[in-house]
Length: 56
Image (cartoon, rainbow, N blue to C red; front, side, top):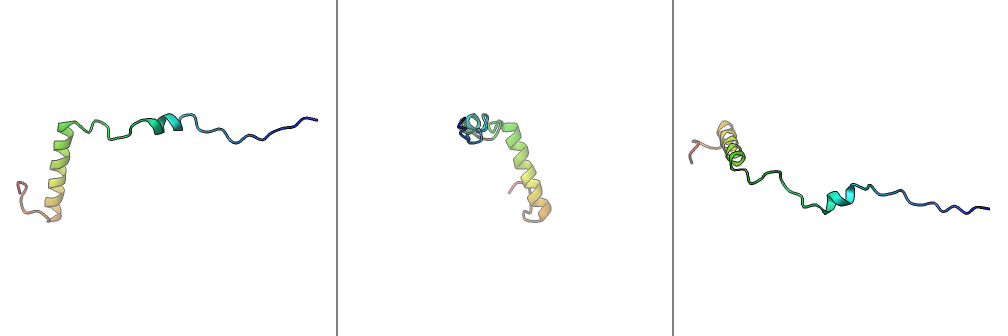
């Protein structure tokens, strides 16, 4: 008579390395991207009427 031991479902082999990596935004140090983002935010505030001019 054979005895079978039911093993738990194997873990995702990609989950542990992904979890151990340091996470963060991609290329967050890019000054051109930051400038575009700031300008886009200013434009949005202006269009919503929350800001009177772009410089202030």
